[in-house]
Image (cartoon, rainbow, N blue to C red; front, top):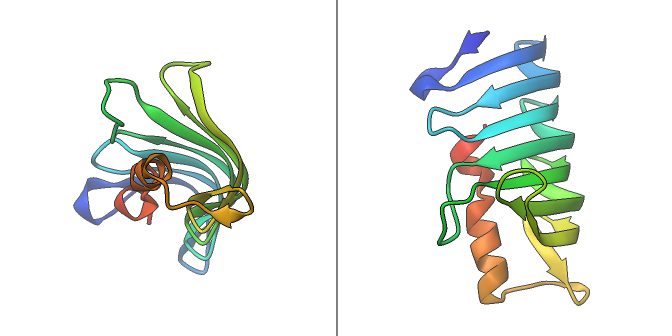
Length: 123
């Protein structure tokens, strides 16, 4: 395991001194990501769980595709213990859910985006 600045821990594959391949990243705040890394960031298929919550005590998780450290492609956001309540399933673009063929700016979508702020929990 590699301990990173700020208390984060990474376990997994490396290439050229960077996270590359399959691994698990655990941020000091409790956020977690397990899946594929490319260029030192989540990129490919993975699952993230977030300590930040949406006006409730239930945890959030996202399972699906990532690009450049953000949900991008097909994925699902759920709240609560497995199997949980699905909040959104479908296309994501640059960390935002895609609704009605455009990236939504609705209040609910903004709450989802805030909850999925991977810059907080994943490198």
